[in-house]
Each structure stands twice: as C-alpha cells, then as structure tokens.
Length: 130
Image (cartoon, rainbow, N blue to C red; front, side, top):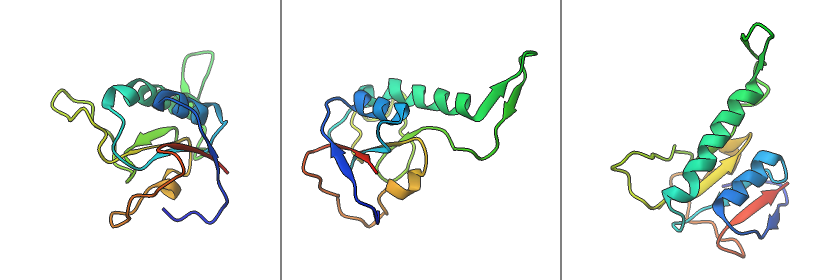
C-alpha cells in the first residue's frame, strides 16, 4: 500500500462499526491487513455497502425506472486487503485470513500489492481519514 498522504488513525471497535464509519463518510477506508476477523464480522456490512453503492449510483424516477448517475463513484466495497472479493459460500473458510479492506471510493489506492509485507499500524485495525 503506497499512500502519499498523511492518515489519521481512528481507534474504534468492531469490523461492522468501522465499515459503517466508511459508509457514513466519517472515514475514507477501513484497513485491517492481517488475519483476525471472521466472515460473520463482515457479511452484513458487505451487503449494506453493495446496496448503498447501487442506491448512490442510480436515481429512481416516479415511474420506477432506475437511471445511472454515471461514473460518480463505484459504490462501496469490502474485500480482502489485496482487493479480492470475500466469498461467503458454505464451503468458505470462516477466517478472513487475508485481512479486510473497506472503502466507498478509490479502493485500489488502499489495497496491498501481491508481494507487500503486512502493513503494521499502532493498533491491530485502523480506520483512516485523509
């Protein structure tokens, strides 16, 4: 992860809480670049982010037609720290063993490259506000 801006780290509890801070615009990204969360910590907020992204990208006319807003934003994303979608199938591991990354925009800016070592923050998880 190469970010050429200063970050403010917010120390708050709960994966869902951190992701909701991102959704509300109180943080730019939730970065947890290591094993430690489980699928049940992220599944509900992942669904909310996807739904919110679809709502933010479209307008509904009185006739019920959805109209895209264009490339205003890509919608919320919650992936592993490398930008891969988290799989919630029955056969998937319970652990998010490649970390968690959540953002509403510029997701690639925060993700780790395949050869990157684990990023270390002053706490095990962090929400960044640029």
